[in-house]
Image (cartoon, rainbow, N blue to C red; front, top):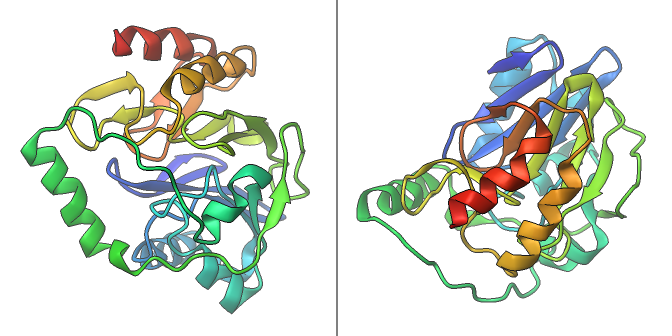
Length: 237
């Protein structure tokens, strides 16, 4: 789905990934679930591109519902996969802390897990090779993503900032559709390692000048990035 001249979405408001499209090539942000491979190739075909045009894949963090097709893209097409050093082990299949599920409703929770099954979420393929990155790095990729560290959901959660797309890709630093309750709007994401730290990290989005705030779960949000932290805190109550 085209969101803007340089910005495309694959997946939906349950699990999403994104493409930054430039004449020089494409940067993929997050890799959803394994079954999103078909969404990726269909979106590329629709704009007259192929996986050969993808120059890099940037993970907002290393959780299984964000690394879906990453190893396949790396293995079959030689695309480097970038992840913050603090989440590199998680992306390779290392241990993840058990986090409380928190509030949930049967319908939305069932819908999330049913969608994950349809998209082959039970066949997670972890990364065997990654390029480790850090806060403040500007990546030599289409759109020149700048790494904004947002620790909290995971130690190495980041928000790639891509000015050409007017976008911040926030992963699970927040959500606009809680996958366990169905609640809509800017709010904290479930399954967060350190919820208080995650809220503090959102202050780093202020002043970045992006009007698209793009989560891994939920609809794209448009507005001022300066408003995000306060809105998520208010939703937490």
